[in-house]
Length: 193
Image 1 (cartoon, rainbow, N blue to C red):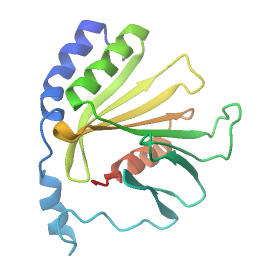
Image 2 (cartoon, one colour):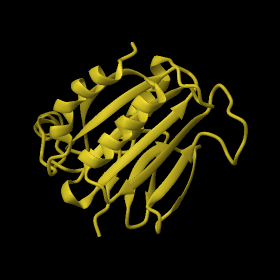
Image 3 (tube, rainbow, N blue to C red):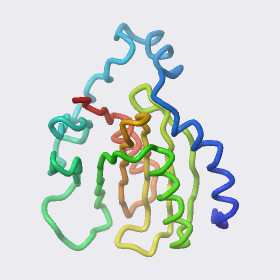
Image 4 (tube, helix red, strand yellow):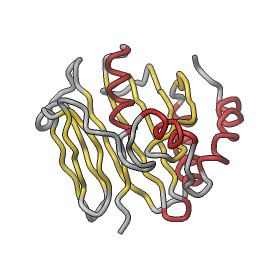
């Protein structure tokens, strides 16, 4: 569904208040403790067929074993793809960009929403999610006039420390692709220095 600018801004306003607040434990930690013996805050076990990519001193994330990753610790930025090298986008391609900014979540999300509005992009849905026991905001954008017509964006606020932003670009809009992308985003963990 397409939201007109004032409606999108109004709908997300309540979410921004939560996203911009300092990190806190969420009920997911309690649900985790009830379902297995891991201590609260322990990352989930690595799923079969996955590996952990770590950008030293910045973050770690679980991705399929056959995927490719490169990053810059100095820029606190990484790109993870299911294909090697640069090429014209293919129907099965998935490309995730991850960076950490010193902006608060409120500032980063407001800037991003303004860009979405200015470009007239379609927000299919949005919601709060839990990523590594922190509240996060997730947006699904569709019908984009870009190389990849779909994006899943996750903003994870770390109070005054900054904000992690994960953007996955993809072509196929199906349940399997969306579930895989969400699983990857949900495995993100910031490495504090």
